[in-house]
Image (cartoon, rainbow, N blue to C red; front, side, top):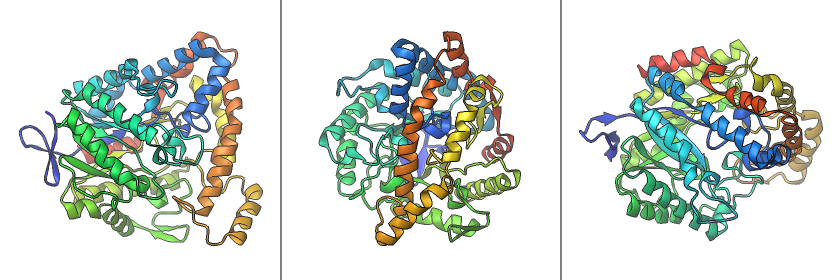
Length: 457
């Protein structure tokens, strides 16, 4: 059943075309602040909880959370919807310690093996996605970056570790036919654009030496939007674009309508998709959208527009025979197909904290860019007045100021408050918090499930 690239399609061993369509398992083996509710980045959050709970009890909570977050019932739900692929983001910390670089932690495969096997039982492929690399391959929280500096591109040491880690992962899964392939680096952000291309050349060669059979899913530079960095079309490779609609962001306007001065409708969505996949179509390689999906607001009228965005995107992908992976499967209510129950133990305990975090705009992905407006407006005006031509990578001055002040400084200041909410809990209460993310403790986003199921079946 091992898949291969054949022209512009993926095919099974019998040459039957396979279009991978499914979801990303965000917030699981690579945790993200907006998905499970903590502030800042995963490593900083784990450190804050370690200070409160101690090493042993912290491990109890996180191991239970990993177990509860995805189980047999989750795999069955996705299979019933018609999903045939799950993209699984993982953090390098599960497989290697910064204190002992180049030493593979074999126990890191325990949960990943479990979920790959659960999905395989339902004939669902896995794409293994290294979402956080040593040194951080991009400038944001989802690469477990506590700063705004992507040090991965500055230090050969980090690149060497990533190659070594992928050699170990590929060796582990080289004989698994239900692993569709490897997504070695999520959303690289090489500001100069000079390192990422040669690094891919090196990584592809190393991976092929260990596992020549599995498909490689390679993200473009600048968060999987720029494919000029590729100097050749590697064999058996899919070049992955990410295709978030501007109107579907937390700060997105009406649909159809204007978002920050840009008109967004179905036609503009298709034009954007065609721009982002020009390299793939020019090279005759398969089309696969590794991430996309709107943010939901809780307002029925606005969310109806978000479902319309999603329906239009799915129709566009179908028209181009593109595969896709919706972001994301499970969370605390922003995007997930299912979300932790607001009346469950986790959100009862952390609800007020989440409201404060939202009021401050501390999560980049959940921010409307308007929170704390009175306090930050003078700083934005100052930067615009004194540095009118400043356009820092990757998204410009307004985003950079917000990233540095709200999404890093304010978010890190919130860490002790989040961790303090674990103080005094006994083991049973910690387990109950983790089990809030088990499917039995979640509520479905029914319109989203119905929309996806109709498309998939």
